[in-house]
Amino acid sequence: MAHRNDPQVIGRLLTEPGRWAVVGLSNNPRRAAVGVSRFLMDRLGMEIVPVSLKGDDVHGQQGYTRLADVPGSIDVVDCFVNSTRVGAVVDQAIAVGAKAVWLQLGVIDEAAAARAAEAGLDVVMDTCPVMEAPALGL
Image (cartoon, rainbow, N blue to C red):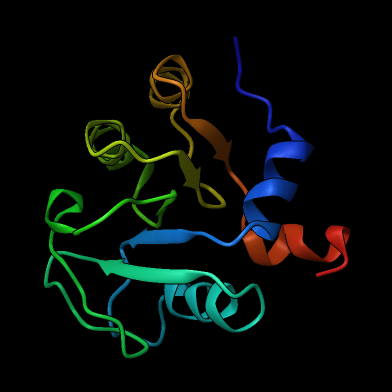
């Protein structure tokens, strides 16, 4: 069965303070993750944790190379990775005890979404917080 985003889950994730690990966030200003993570911080008041292959520090926040290296709890794992790679990120999110995964616009993996939901995580797929926020008046 195809995943359907729950508007209540989207609303809760975007309005309740949280710690978002943004996977794929590097210092490359041409990448969408840079602007979206800035929006999460500045407009929505979220704490962000950059996670990328290089472990770049971004927006003054310490970066990490793996979710498993991030100290403390993670509320949302925001996935800016290719659909063919996102399943591994979702599995890592489950392993570290994240509460939710958010697969960005164009990032689709039905099997990974199902695994996350079965593990008790909230799942949002194929959309972006910047696109969803206006409907919530944010």
